[in-house]
Length: 206
Ligand code: 0O2
Ligand code: 0O2
Image (cartoon, rainbow, N blue to C red):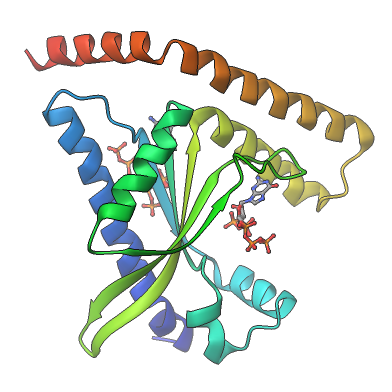
């Protein structure tokens, strides 16, 4: 194995474990016929090229990566309603197998781009044959609507490198407003929607 594969191995282990644990929370809610605040979970290890580019941009040396680059392991949790976000945050905070070390609330403080999400940096112990390695991981929590916007904006950003033509920039702003409106509207009928979902999942289980 090359040096990068060895370096990244605990991060891969961590995202696999975190995915299983977070999907487990969803299952627990479903089994007890309660609405799950987690809709689905995705995760990735940052590609080596992106690690190198970010390290060079932020002046982080190879030896400092483990302590200074917190998003080499990245987990994303999607939920249906804005109120689910803090429920998930608190579930993570209560756990004994991970420790929150930083939080960034881009929902209260929407980014200039229009980006909204709740970011948590955790410290997570990974057991290896050489002992425990404490790694940092970033968990992004967002609604389906926030995720839709961020996914589209991320692809466009890749193409335009942040230098959007005026029309695209305006449309993205409008789309961010629409995504915000959608979250607001859905919040107003949250209980109604959750009752309906519980009813259908009960019927399916029978
Ligand atoms: P299940 O059975 O759907 O729960 P990997 O590439 O292997 O590291 P992963 O997790 O396999 O990662 O793939 P990915 O692309 O990150 O997607 C993670 C999970 O999210 C997948 O479920 C997708 O089905 C689910 N997913 C992605 N987009 C959506 C969506 O818009 N709505 C819903 N409801 N689910 C979505 P799994 O992991 O296959 O398991
Ligand atoms: P990936 O893996 O491609 O998603 P920086 O990256 O230096 O600007 P910082 O301080 O590392 O920012 O962390 P921050 O801003 O808390 O979170 C960065 C991550 O949040 C990004 O990861 C995105 O996933 C997401 N994000 C932040 N702002 C935006 C935005 O305006 N639009 C979209 N679509 N996503 C955003 P990366 O680095 O893009 O990596």
